[in-house]
Amino acid sequence: MKTSKAVVAFRTDASTTIGTGHVMRCLALAESLTELGFRCVFISAALPGNLNSFIRKSGFECIEINIIENWTPKRGGSSAESQEKDANCFLEKCKHLNIFLIIVDHYSFDKPWENMVFSYTKCILVIEDMPSIAHSCHIIVDSTVEENLLYQDLVPESTIKLLGPKFALLRKEFQGRQDVLKRQYKKDKYKLLINMGGTDPDNITFEILKALPINVEKKFSLTFIVGKGFQQFTSLKNSLEIKFPNASLKCGVKNMSKEMAHSDLAIGAAGTTAWERCAMGLPTIQLILAENQRLVAEKTTKNGAALTLRNLTELGDLLSNLNEEKLMKMAQSAVRLVDARGTERVREEIRKLYNANC
Image (tube, helix red, strand yellow):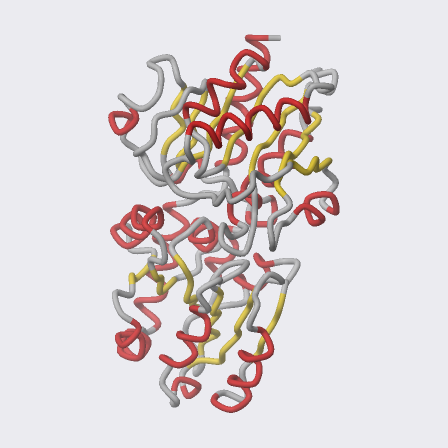
């Protein structure tokens, strides 16, 4: 397939409040599209805690967009005026690019933003995780739901709907790791991984530390992993040294799949990382930290891949009740739910779209 370096422009952001998940799943897709010959360009705001330098280090162009004064990204789209300003800024930054496809992964933009840029590209793909907002796009990707009817009144009839965990956008490191099912659960002590995402703005990691019973190390060895955007590293380190001096604390690990493969159980949020844990066959005790995580939590719990924690006071009991048989069943359920080929499937739909339009 020859794309003559057709441009795919990503409009997505990361920050201490937004988190890193949107950018990371876009990077997964960008890496895959680059293999087909596409030129992938990111257009991102220079928000506090952004990943713009990381995007460049990953080998992609990143054009910084001027953020609108007093503009705060929020679920359900910003005002029409704010979306119009951002769309105009986006188009100004991209006017020198011959864009084939615009990929939008952002809670602040929906139909008004997409209508503004519609005539400047051949195709628009929207990445969503909550079927409640109307979009104007050619493809919509939502790994949290599988029912087409949920998007019936939210997108044009002709929109291609790529729905369910089979379309979860995962980076290459999480693909082809079905060997993790060889993990042995018959052991004296299990490895427990605690990770609450790239930024953890509400410091849930510290709340988990407080909720863990003091005798937890009799059954589990503890590894805490935080992202480089985590603001309370020193405080967490000091608290860990007091309560669990044998615990490991890591920051900004480069290969999360390796950490997951070497763990027996995880505690984490029911966000995009939930699909990564499933692909790695890693049983999880998960927390719902945002409304858009509720559907992921329901799906993974229903399929037996995870246990959802309603209150941190339940954590000690959940940990004490887990055993070899339960962990093995959860691991098997997890890999059945996510086969880690979602990025490949989305890429194939984009390839077909390119062949039909170029």
